[in-house]
Structure formats: C-alpha cells, structure tokens
Length: 187
Image (cartoon, rainbow, N blue to C red; front, top):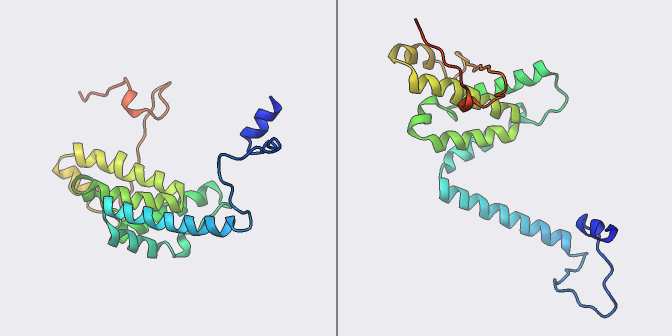
C-alpha cells in the first residue's frame, strides 16, 4: 500500500535490476530547458488556435496592452472593501475602453466572452462582478425590459455610471437561479 501511495505521489519505485523502462527518460540536465521551449511553443500554438477558432485578435491585443497597467497587477493584501473597489475600477475601465459592451451580449456574445476571459484572468472578482453586471443585471434588462427601461438603464451601462446588481433569495437554492420556485406577480 505504501509503495502504491508513493507511486501515486510521483515518487518512483526502484526498478528491478536489468529491467528496462517502457517510457524513455530524458536526461535531467536538459529537461528544464526543453520543457520551457515546449511550453512556449505550445502556448503560441494554443494562442494561434484560439484566434483561428474565435478571432478577435485586435480586441485581445488591445486588452493585453491595457493589462500592462498596474491597475491589473495581482493583489492579495486587500481588505474586502478594497477588493470590491479594485474589481469595480477594472470593470469600469473595460467598459469605458469598449472592451465590454452590453449591445454585444445580443449581437456578438463571443466578443463579450473573450473580454470576460481576460478580465477574469487578471482578478477573479472582476470576472464575477462583470458576470453580474453584464449577464444577470444588464442581460435581464436587455431581454425583458421595455424601451423605457433600456433607455433609462442601459444608456450609461458600459461605463458603470449605472452599475447594476442582482439579488435572489429562496431557502435551499444558494445561487441556483433557474431552480427558484417563488414567483412574483404584480397586482
């Protein structure tokens, strides 16, 4: 049992004398450089595949350049309030620069997903906040709102001059919006 556990953890059992490995083992001194070269080549191939599959190279390049700004540096020393403020600032900037646009949710959703992927990779909380803003709040108004709702709430949506939120409550459902059983009816 101990041998099996060690094997599962990556520790190798000693081969029996005269036994040959079924898998060729690279020379250890060359391995790190080879791995780095392989990783760089694979990363480039994945990037090319992603662009070929999804496009949006100009958008991705513009976002990549924007994310060099210190606003997007990883931070792990923030209070809850500071973390929320950072996520808000990042999302606001993405909207102001046109990376995220509510109109694309209907016209070009893959563009929205591309921008969200990058924003969420910078700071997970920003990705969550963007999901609430664009899908739960903005998407609801876009899909279910009348012309007056859209004009009132979506005009300043992308710049976060009109930030949104989403709330739900029903015991035992956590964040399962589709599983809610309660409905509201206007009198």
